Image (tube, rainbow, N blue to C red; front, side):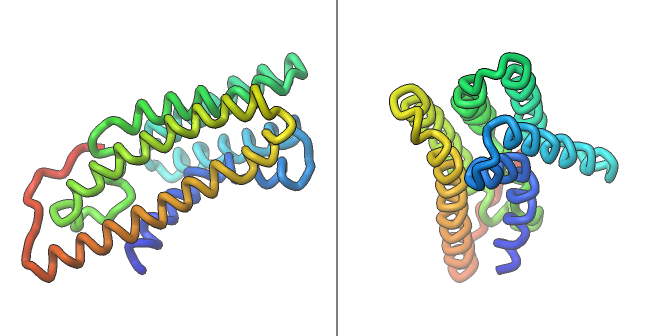
Amino acid sequence: MRNLLYALGPMLFDSLGIITFAILLAAGAGIVPAVVGGTLVAVAVIGYELARGHPIAALQWISLASVLLTAAATLLTGDPRFVMAKPTVVYLIVGTVMLRKGWLNRYIPPEQMALVGDVMDRFGLIWAALMFASAGLNLIVALLFTSWWPLFIGVFPLASKFGLFAIHIAVVHFIGQARLRRGEVAMQPAAAE
């Protein structure tokens, strides 16, 4: 349970902008208020981390930049298609960043790297695959099922990520416990974040 809470905190914190966007959109606030709300929260998250002197992860910078660019395009043109296309572009960028070995290291306690670091690296690739699949699915829904897009974006991104997160935590825990019972420790240097 401790490991779940350790990982869940940064994941929720990193996702506050998109969570705010999804909640506002699902509540019927409209695309522009949802974009503004999500943008303000994403900026606040980065500002909070900077104020605390914490390093900002690459995924957080990418998320903030994409939120700011698409928010500006949407607000300047009044065209919601920028917002609808944004997730596809973001998922492709984020998926590409997630191909980098060691990006998940911040989500587990450092003392567990020797035990499950290799499993975390494999899950990094699974997360990247989810991002690429989400990019394709978002584009399909945005272009072919436009009227369903607000419901899709309000439910699928969070549901798929939290679903994979639950599977990820369960598998890492199971493998870690099995290795501890067998006295195994995957001896490998911790990958840099």
